Image (cartoon, rainbow, N blue to C red; front, top):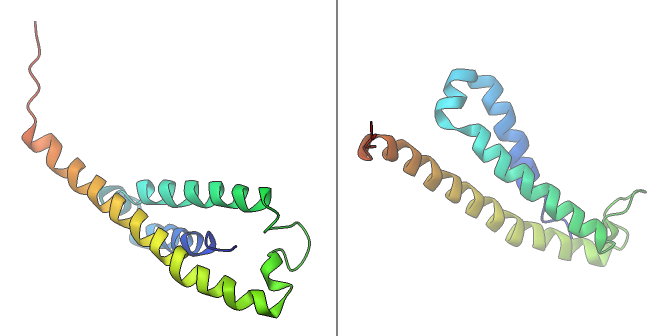
Length: 113
């Protein structure tokens, strides 16, 4: 229903964080990678939710908010699925950054002349 909002909020926070800490430090931390992963996932999930009619172009935009009984289900989904997606994407980004920081130091390329 609205699980894509949680990674969207994390993506907004990391974009703001990148602006606050400066370009050089953000590049060193590879925050652009994290933002690309988060916003790509948000875009795909938003399209999927639009396709299934869970997101509509008129207020309240999320069909689950039209019925108060569905709102509790939506919030539960955001708290479980949305947070889990954000954690897994952030974990994948952390692994990518760790591998990228180790690789250039340990792998020596042999160039044929």
